[in-house]
Image (cartoon, rainbow, N blue to C red):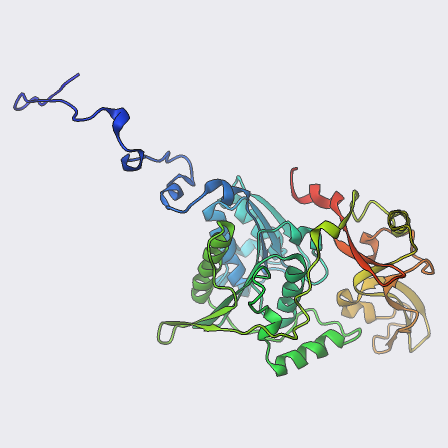
Length: 421
């Protein structure tokens, strides 16, 4: 019906029918009770992709707090938080997710709780463990992207190693009070460098030394640590999530470019890094060759899995762990022998303390009999579960066959621990 203007009595007729209006020219009013509705105005935004995305954040300090906050605000549907440390009062000046009453609690668990408060629809899981030994490769294989929010080279090296094995892109950043850097490492780009490619000869030497240190327990690596502020954490946390969203949407990213920001003169520069032709960290699994074990790491014994795999491959085999297993040790002071069954990186200072005489200076192992990376029929702990020797949930391990072939197998029974279906 005509619209009549009361003051002048003019009758207006619509010039076109509603059905003929170009859909692109329509003004869409968002449902303001939908927390993510306004994101639909972003031209390239695909809500389903973001809601179904799986992102792992390694490190829940200042930088990790900003990354997690941004992931939650953007509606990322599945988030894994990995951090082994506890909250201290000194963290509060640069960590938006923590409160005073959280002191002494695990960072990963508190961060996961706060992310759920920001985005109740998100599936958020905390892993209060080290990325080196506490996260199964099967879980990393499920991720769309891994975001590293770390302050030491050794943990970065392991993330790079795992992501390249599994063909998963990862985003690294490091921050200082007024400076920072960010890089994307994407194994799908075969001509671009990995993190290991970018290390200097000195850094490589230090890394080899760290990796070869036997039975030296250090909870926190000091390589690369520096003080931080919430300001640079905000800047680089935003940059990391921006790049993650581009990866989730299949948009181009600049893998192998190192971006450096200086707050002293507000400059952002990118420098290309070269792939090293002799870098040995570009190996990857063929997904088609991964044998699946329909059980969780805490449900089956080593013997049961070994027998099942022997039947599958029709061959005797050894199970290869990702890290050396310390089976036992002897006190050099009193001779007391004990069994440990712990992965080498998980050895702590308390493990050096003899329960018999209290000595902590003479922790002795026989490297031929007390340390192994291959589990054979000769070992006496085959009736233990994999979790009882420190293998994390959703692990991917390997078997070594007599002909030299190495084949991976995955504990897919742990999938339900992290995902509903």
